[in-house]
Amino acid sequence: MKQEKSMAQWTRNLLAVCLIVLACVASVAAQTTAFTYQGRFTDSTVAQPTNGTYQMQFALFDAANAPVGAAITVPSVQVVNGIFTVSLDFGAAAFAANAERLLEIRVFNPATSVYVPLSPRQPVTSAPFAIRALNATTADVSTNTLNVGGTPAAQIIKEGDTRLTDTRTPTAGSTNYIQNQNAAAQTSSNFNISGTGAA
Picture 1 (cartoon, helix red, strand yellow):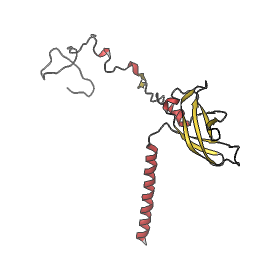
Picture 2 (tube, helix red, strand yellow):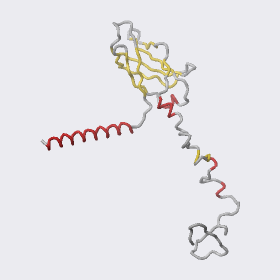
Picture 3 (spheres, rainbow, N blue to C red):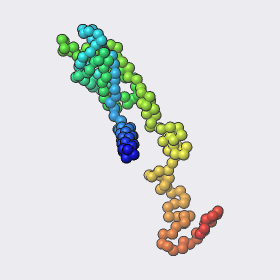
Picture 4 (tube, rainbow, N blue to C red):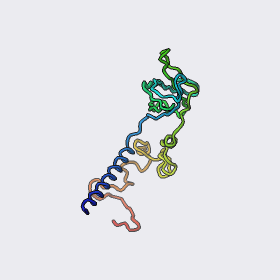
């Protein structure tokens, strides 16, 4: 009986570990440019609420009514009680400028063989994490990637900086530096060490 209890406990522990591992794997999966859109659709030619499979197109427009990228056709959209859900991927470039985007939904009419646009176009709004990501290029104020310890990055000397090779004294190879290239004593060199230093 005791062995059965410990085996059941071991199985529960193993299951808990597996669930934690799966959750971690899901959380580190690469973020894509696809997003989920859910809408409501009413087909006045059928009994309500609307149920069935429809062919739809989704197109992005800017505030000036100009198309942004190519339209996406989804051939089989399941509508259940008037609700449908699709995954759309217009790519990162479609949203690069942080500008207003409107989504136009079109439904294929088999009688006329054309896509009928639904009105009005729907604004594409930001998700909370997307708003946070908008500032990711400069990170947080406390750890701003444009600064190093509070000093603007442009003021930090970096490789290729002319200040590393200009002729201001002391120049490279100057006796004003402590040097020991040949393991021989350097003439005319003095230095002091204070505190706990030893020489």
